[in-house]
Image 1 (tube, chains in turn brown, purple):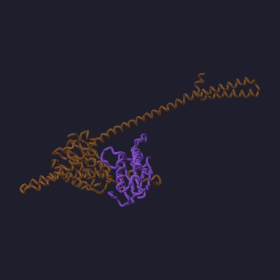
Image 2 (tube, rainbow over the protein chains, first blue to last red):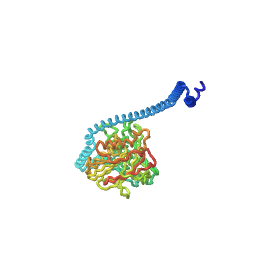
Image 3 (cartoon, rainbow over the protein chains, first blue to last red):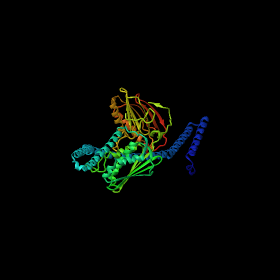
Length: 359
Length: 168
């Protein structure tokens, strides 16, 4: 009995079949020998009961192995689905936070829309009004007081300069938003480019009593780099403008240039108020300024850095910043040298897998 | 047009986040990974246009440029409208949206897939029929678009070196 239990189901089934075959042979023999019908029926009954036992054996085995296996399989599948579900839920959660963020942005943009007119008057109309007033004043100055004119002209310059700079960014942003901006690559004298930009901000820096210094790693040797001159200049201008804006008086703004074979790294360092944690997230947003409110002392649409982000995108570079409150901020931009091939071709190579398809 | 052609070749290379529309015969080349190009054509007025967007929806970050699908489609419609195209004449063809960066387990949320969904849904909302499409898969595509005939030649291309940062 014990031995039987230990032996595998296969062996037991084979044993059963042997018995059944024996019984069948017996029946055949009984029929041939013309034995008593009832005895034959007895024998046939025995065959049937043996077959039933075989069925039971097989069903038992099926329960023990196949079904258990299937249950295990199902469990694994359930586990997998549960994991997937969790992943989906995480995604949904992140989407929900995104939606919350978006609705906040939407309400922000609504309030911005309502402030639009006052912003515009601040940024565009006020400079014109003061320039107009100043010119009138200059026209009325007596000959003896000609020295006054110089200070008036310097005020006028500030107004016009700001206007000019604002418009540059507005046009750049409009071109980006129209999808018309493409890189125009040429060999650029980077040093000269920086010097020109610093010159552009000369009076602005003087007004805020900030000195701008350029630290090149390649002293006295003009360095050339293949990039888009106009966009690079605007990039640097925006960074310098911000650096001056947020500098403390009597401090410095440093521009560090480092050109390696494949990339141009420019850093603009200021020693000013820094960027608060709350504002670090929205630095590159359109129309965001670190100060809320319309009547802030510092001007600008906050368009500069979002234009910078777009320029960096198109030049395939990277922009990042480190900041410390009341210590200052460093903006770092990295621009790679563009290759002869266009961006897409460079990434994918020219391998053609299939024949050309027409659509 | 504001597009300046670089080099000697006659075709125009369409950079990501830009768009192009013209009444004349122009050959536009572009390369797509998870990005999508929607080609719109007005057969009545013979005006063709194409965009190339990288992400589905502008979330208020940075400029509202055609880097984002919803803006890219609106701007293209606007530009073609300015050239005289009628929205109800338009037929669309869409290309791209490959899943190059995504992890295979979570296909639903890959950039390419989301880009494709956006194109399909927006065009449906605008009742612009999509008459041809080749989207998804995990191969890049190079397409050449003829703005005067609405004919597009597509080649599949093998990714050279996949750079997650660049290929957004």
